Figure 1: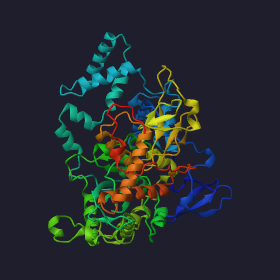
Figure 2 (figure 1 turned 90 degrees about the vertical axis):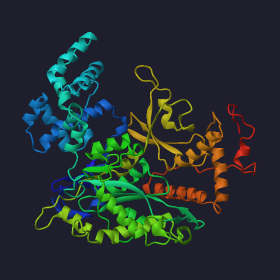
Figure 3 (figure 1 turned 135 degrees about the vertical axis):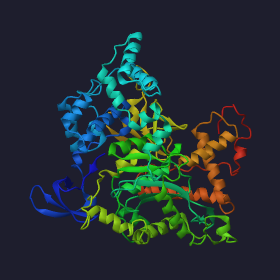
Figure 4 (figure 1 turned 30 degrees about the vertical axis):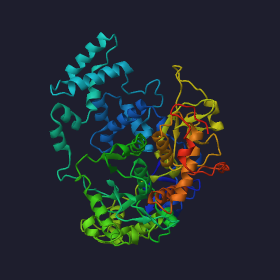
Length: 621
């Protein structure tokens, strides 16, 4: 993945021709100089690329060993004071005991392509020149001793810690590291962490949190993006029967500097990492395609790579995929402290404002029972999820962004434009960097599974997948003769295909169900099936049992849709996921059509399927 810089003087490509950015015109176009003809041309931003298509080489972050990724992070930390002009190259070289030529090389590599992976070791097996490397056993002793002695209330000096590391290494018959190596590890510890363990957690929190009890105000557009979730105060209906199915969930993001909404995601599924991923995807990418898809007239010109995201601290919202993507692009993740709601003031005010407008819609639940009174939300509900999404988009684009905000004393749209292009008093930061390859970005954010590849393919959640792209890796071994695991990506909206990352070709390949007659299902539907089987104490079931149970449950759900809200909700959620996946262009390519088997038994009672099966019997349907 590469960033596309639109700064004046940056190189961009249009139709395989090289241009130099001369002027930023607006949010959709620039003036650039054609390097062949030396003539100025107006180019649309959406068609620009960071490289010639033939030169594009993708890096998939799950494939990078942790030690190499951490080494790249260490190098960037050394370069940051140089990039911010706080230190000279010579000072950074002396402070970190790294040769000046190495500092120059790292700086050139990062300047040429300012993403974290540009600093990955070129030959990690041999060790990168200038980096401080020790073997794994020595590193374990270093880290353990630092934790025990340096990060303690006794406040041992770095020299005292080094002598203890030497002693422990000699006792273990391991060559001890140099004192500079130990000092480098200690210098890498943040001041916040040192204060927390050597003094007190309370002092650390007091010193390094914001004095006003919330995240910092954004200093410029896309400096800080807050993201949060909430149930929407409205009952929606399904599209087929127009009957009530309950409240949806909203995940929404706001640019703290301008109060512009950068993206949102509406869903019938409870908030999860997937909700965050969808919201971030919309936040970072341009919105023209989405506005056409949702059929909303207007402009929503905020896009690009931000400096930081503020996210909910809940465990289900954390992901190594998201962490690495953000580190690669230079985005900081600030996890919202538990039980400290003040660390999200702007997003909470946005949610409050949005809900107050929702309270004017038919079917609203209002904010509480007292406010709702005798109003029958179910009876008056008329909007589907798609209609609510269209309405909320129209509200964002044509009302919220154009209304004067008391906190900034102008409209969010005007504040953002002023921050980008400047005015008589401020120069403006210019157009932000954008993602060069949108499809790679979307796939990279999908959840990751690691599996071995067997003769029959790969198995995830008891479901078998196979394609010819797996064949050369069947029963592959690591150097130590253990079974080798490979990286697979899975879109939770449709698990009928997975993406296999070939470590040699450095590319993802789609792998379908081994049995192509099985219907596409979502991860949520799979969980419902497995919960049913577990509740019935049915064990050792296979994929055949899973899909037969799914088919029965679908038929029962369709029959119950007119009678029960939960059945209608599940059907509506399924439809919404499919439509979003179509929009994301992550549907399987050339995927075989589902071949529906004829039902031999018209009885749809699931209990009858398993009435003669004991918990530990071999199951065969």
